[in-house]
Image (cartoon, rainbow, N blue to C red; front, top):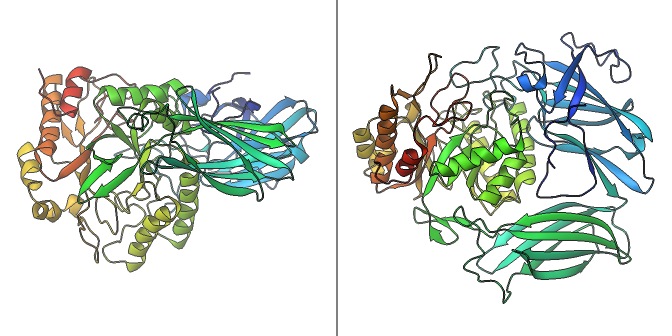
Length: 582
């Protein structure tokens, strides 16, 4: 059986005992929605095969059809030798959009939300020998109040919208744990007091259980402690005052992505019954007096828009190395960060951003219509996003809404403005360690940054527009005001979080961008014009260039869709960093 994407899918919370369930599954369209009534989860002859975790629309799935099929089914058999002392947790990295799961014909779990993981214990459903998992996925092609990001509601991609992803698109795996196990951990850095806040949760806590926590830095043990457990959850502060650490050198940043390794053992009567390997980074992101500070020092953000699409896998990278390579390209091009646009990215991307050093803005995939159901859907899934990715030091900002998508009437609707405010405060209530935007690009309610989308190609116009606060705030991107009614600029740092978008095609294939270049020289000069204009501004504290790669019909990347540089990387890097090109 083919087994693609074999790597451990949750690198900040690793265990040794697990079974990868990617590979070939049986598959079926259910266009008439007959499967539930006919109980396909119990018995059905599946006519197709698919390679999980790739969606049927992708070529790597082995199917590669882009017609609408809103209801799909999967089935996989696997062998397991049961251990009566163990428990078994079935994990799905992401299934778009709704998922029902059966194990050996018994209903196991339901989940709604196409971008976040879910799990369930299936111990009672399993048997030694062959077992069967059946998944039914529903993904509406027409519901515009469903969070979908750049996935188009029409069959053919056009403009800024691309091929859809239906069903399983991240790793499926089975985890073996003991009768009691560590279920959650959260690390919150506090560099000012040289300590890390450690929150934990233990499933099925028993008497005489303890947690042994060991923290090391570059191979040297910094601290270890044993925590007596009274409740199934708790908090401990670990101070990192150690004679072997130079506290100027242990901070995490794109320039020095230092990480602390953590080993956590759950002990019962002195015997280890669970072990989790993790890590954290000590970094602080903050704003003061119109300036961004990273680790208490002013910091200029040089970001690139990264939509995370791949020609053969669509939303699913062909391999872990593809995710790593995108980060390496980002850094080679002179950027110190990326804005993951309208996609909740694979956790392995954030792992490599942590390891290699890249600032990331984490962004929700938005819906396009406002309704009470849309509010319920996005608030539920957004909380799951924050919980999943909380421990990544690379993520320094949260973007729950982009360009008023899902809240198109902010100008006139108090209800929608309240929703925008709610998303800001909801995010802050869950995470105080990152910057939060209410609505990236325009019509801000309350945001930690004032971000503006501006695709002007004239250097002269850009320089004049961002000479003063008044001229900057008078700009109407896409005819929208920078702030929504009732809200105003409060000395937030100003960033141009989308700009450029220069198209340069290197073949006869048609495509589009926000402005055009017809040669490599024109491309470099056009890129230099818009970047230099922002560096000239006394106001701008960072930018996000559109974009890292071409995506389908959109050819405004610095790289082609198959990740070939459109110009000299060395020259592009010099421009990105504000240096003179040769």
